[in-house]
Image 1 (cartoon, rainbow, N blue to C red):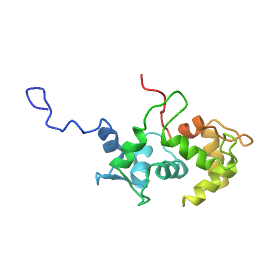
Image 2: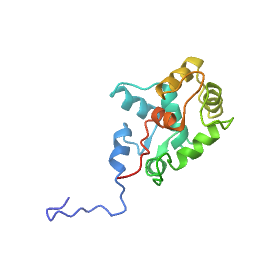
Image 3: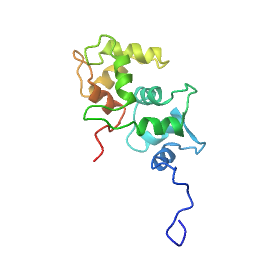
Image 4: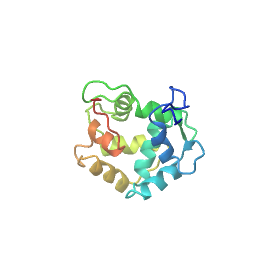
Length: 156
């Protein structure tokens, strides 16, 4: 910030850059699995299954990293009426193979394997519990958002 109170940054710089920078632990301009592990280790830890799910959602070019543009696309998805979260709802529908509105153990395990993230039955069960679901019913869309730690409530 200049003494006049103005900033020298272009007005197109997003409000999400500081959040991206916090996650980019090694400051290489992209978020890796190791960056996410380092971040979550400092705030109580998340398992590789959750980190893998986050990477699957955000790494749209499948290069193994989340660049700023990918990060911004995920966190700034256009806010819709309650219960809608842009691209996340589409991801949920792809994962929900039987279309019942819940991600079963089988749905989650199949998706994780297809995405290249092998997960044990215990990993999947932990994801379901973390998302507020049970082994019989699975996880709702809101549960998936909880697993991924995304807030898709409407902007106030």
